Length: 423
Image (cartoon, rainbow, N blue to C red; front, side, top):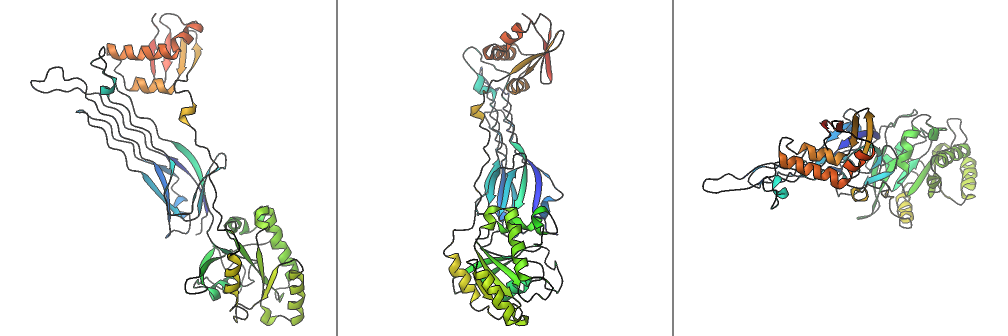
């Protein structure tokens, strides 16, 4: 089954927690704190895999999480950084933010792309030692890793796209000019997934062609299979528009040509303006008058027309060279530039908080940074509580509580922690 879109949730690894430890050694007095820092959490990295051609692997597994960093240890030993989580996708996969639709990355090259960064490791208690606080019994927890929901869209990378109604001979054509061997039969929708073929022009001159299936009237609105495959035409620099010039299925070739172009325009104005070479296929069973009339119609619109027969190879000898020369005049394959702006932690107030009254004698403080301090503190230790209270005071939390009318013995909630307010 060909799957070319998928929505997944990715989560980078949390940083390891700093350690609370003290140096103990015979004949060494007052060894002091020696808790090491935590390791960095693993990143979520996307990389192109040339052996993949579909997003089928993401149909059932929708959640991906990197490993957390190792916690710090005693003896000033820092925790290990976690290994990155590498997610392999087909070359040409565009990663978008699921909420905004903005492009995060285009996995078109060979370089890996970091999409979600792991959290930094927390500090060990040695970093909190001062001349007046010589035995800190608290450390800093690791920061959480980035997490987001992304939409994967496979947009095949090809120089040339073969477009046209079903059963006009696109599969026969690509098999005739390249080594691709698609399924060929005399009925509509034989091809159910895009087929790539490398066309050899000279000893070192080649281009990649893609047979794009399923284009019918209404494809841009989701009719048939065309809506799923129109996105694969977006990267193609040149379109080979294949038309059954014989009208053997009772259709008018001029009407077919106009309808396919209308679908391109409905899907994307940029796609409608893409250069085209029109191939009048099945000319071996068409009358000369039919071919001449269609040639005049196409050339009257300023387009190149070439009569061919993919089945008998009539007119195909010069086609690869014509296409290759035209490609030299066109810009390279489209690469989607990132649009998504990653939230900048530095732009936010690192000590932001809100205080709200949640009961007659209850207040709730929303401050993730305070919760992390509490997680790494020993609430039974006097110096730990002193450090925590100093953070409350310096950040203005205590002043805000007073403004809201806090009274002695009122309950203060901070995350999962609660304590009584004491003047």
